[in-house]
Image 1 (cartoon, rainbow, N blue to C red):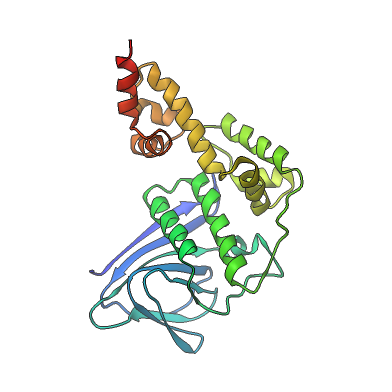
Image 2 (cartoon, rainbow, N blue to C red; image 1 turned 30 degrees about the horizontal axis):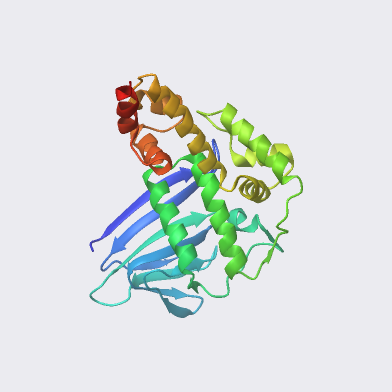
Length: 273
């Protein structure tokens, strides 16, 4: 484990606000006292970190979630002299955690949380979005996970879960995404058009379709790519036609949905009499 830090910036939807993500691995680095305007949400992925926070000292370990609230001064450094510490963190605008709650900004009495399932989900989202920060994927996944974090671990009250007219909302969103395949609108814009919060739109879509908007759109793109592959087009040419960033992005989702690479699928259908 060396001294490494890499920042990635994603956007919450097309032309949406930025969201910064940090992937860090340190052996000796000690942060000076500082504070952030955003919520800092981190998942420890190795070693142990000591953080001075709210007049006390907290310790992380692999798989723990750390939530530091906006404006709270803190430091960070290695938990011992040998292991160092590694983590993935994102810096979330306060409104992202308040969207699905009532009573103002969520307050986290405990900064270190033991929630293995949510930690895995946050780490997976961070890893995938750092590699390919797709705006719609960012907007489909992170606000949902941050709302879950607030619901499970903050003092805020959850907003009502049922969304009237969820089926019609989901169909409207689905049709807009399919109709603007290569440059989909932001969920925030769609929610405003429908008189909803983004959390309500996400809940209505997930309840009806069984998956988040970006995952539905990715599967729809794969279906379109499949038809184009059958015409003989190359995967590299098809990727931008159906809205994927590049061939690697197409391949990742094609394998996820159909179990083979686009090239293997193209070869198999061309070899069929």
